[in-house]
Image (cartoon, rainbow, N blue to C red; front, side, top):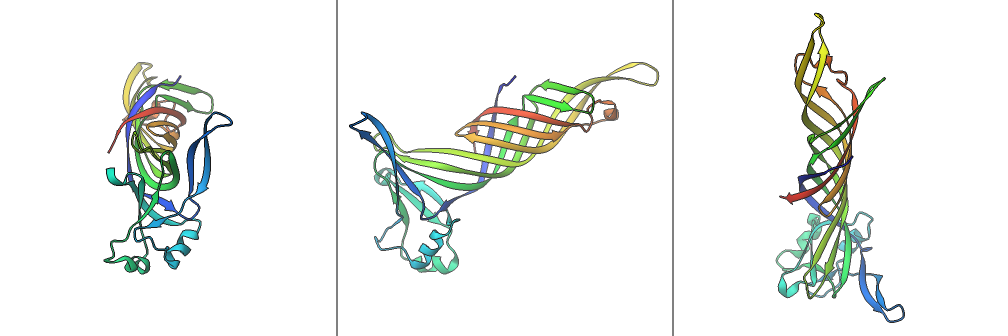
Length: 255
């Protein structure tokens, strides 16, 4: 059983990887097949002064990891330009001081570029499905099971220029990190006087998690341990037991 859950995510210090191997994709109409197709080509970084790229900068861009940068589309008059704000080493950035020099990709209508990025990500999740395991039994449970996943994300953004309806950005990323969840449980046990005791206790669930995100939709798996809190927590059959959880959700907002 799976259920939708709402949540939010916060991304810190997203850095795109810019190198010379960035590929441009464009849609075109094929007269032979009578439908829209896509084709790929290399796209070049341009300078605002229309000069060639500096040799030192080109050397850095030729490396596999390229140069980290932030990226954004221009305003209404320059909406076909994708501006690149390089995080340049001091020896390279000094060459640009006072020149109002900037770098950009120029896109035509229906052209797009996919650029990889890394970032630290904070995600609030609800894990509606959990399965606990012990040596001789298992426990299947459903509920909100709220928690947070903090980790390093790797992904890509596809930037598409559409001259008539506006530009589009679509993200796809994978996050792996540490998870911490909180919830409550109800259980019963028989004490030394042979009396049945009903207990409600808080539950803390540390673990590791993986989250796949496309736009605002996410799917995740969590592997963790459950620890009940309170005087009688040791009476719970699944105290300290491992569990596997599934999270399927939609982020209502980001900040």
